[in-house]
Length: 609
Image (tube, rainbow, N blue to C red; front, side, top):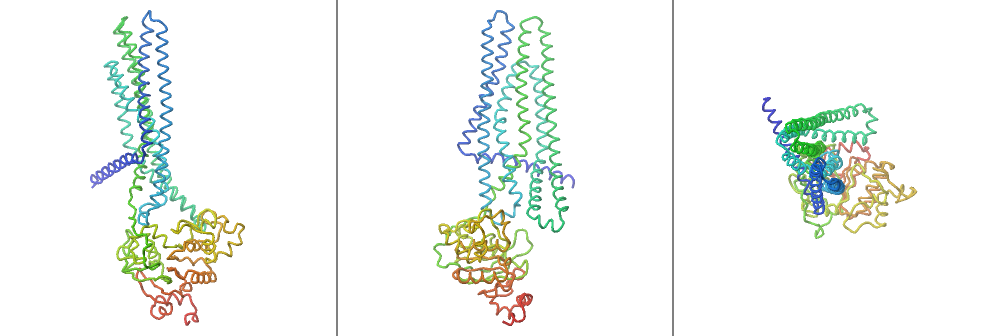
């Protein structure tokens, strides 16, 4: 059993590492032609820089030979030194150019990835959203893209020239003598082996770190958004424990990574210093063996040049150690970004709906639906028709499927069985934009955006060329928001803070209703949207809706009988099934569940009516 588990873990880790590596390669395809040209420019200047760096030891060899050989003019030594200085300055100029284009390309890539992620997530249906938490999507759009950007910049600055530098250094070392080549090969091989082992150790830890970042984001988000509930229930300690658990997990993974990476510094120093000592020891023996001859001068010259080549070679490894700590984390981040970008959103339809002969008709035909991973259906064999201009209400206990039913109308989810039709067309065949333009949606909890009252009412596109001031004024009046809006200093232009924190619950809900009405849609959907209103405002608002939107179909989910008594059709849901259907008077006679709900809310006189 233990062996099988171990093999499974090894197989999983290999699969994970493979996906991460592929993720980094897939990121490259999001570079545009101009940015690929910039990458080639970086590569060209990296080659030029390495070539200039490799010329420096050749001039060092020449200067050493000129100095040690009697009779050479000083001008030759100065000329060689001047060329060596030009090579150094040229190499420095190449570094500046490489850094400029690397930062420009990496910034453009990160900007594009953020745009693509934002657009992709905006196209997700509820089914796709269920795969990723909000905190994870935020982390992928910010922290993960930053990791990729930093790696792309450092990679172009270092990784592109490291192979060229290493090859040039090895060729230079190989031409300096067999003994030195053997010593350098042993030291270089040892350092590379340690780097490879460290990389294999830290890759799983970086994946854990990103997961803990998601948990930290989630915990902080819950604590901030639900701060009133947290304080009201004295749950600060509970959230502190959740945060501490995620924070400790991230710290442990980070410490494990840092311990592995900390090995590289001493190993690099050991390899560099050890091989330098070996070079001078070998050189001392070779010079001693050559005696006072020209061969001794050649050995000394080769030893000086060899030291420079070794410096180049180990600088290449140092560059690798600077990039390696970022590579595993960037690989994990790239895989997480690609996972979102390659998630298939629900297919868009082709129907615009403009050619429909009916307007505002909603029909369910034998619809069943089950949430992903759920044991049973949330809706079972639902059938009804809401004709244009009718008001159809849904009532039932919590969890009976009322909101789920509305979500199917808006295609937040798709029916597992049966058809949901709008104007005799299955909602799956509509273009999502065309479907949205037919609907005005008011959720149970009002969602407002920072801006003004006017910008929140005239929100989004309606497919009719935008909103006029008259449309906004009409919507405000129908939603019974005129009373409090007119009292504000700025009127319709009064500011709304983040999430509407400067408005009451009823005010936010009326602005949300005005937003839906302003679209002038064929269908208005109210998901328990009247619960935040007092009975008087509720009655007046419904009266305005009936009078001013008589041709608009209205689907209403409500908990209060008073809100839906006047509906043309009331559908009672119980356990995802239709338990009763009819008018208020009909259901009082025929539906036990509706009578029980009515009896709990209405007086005997009202029931008698």
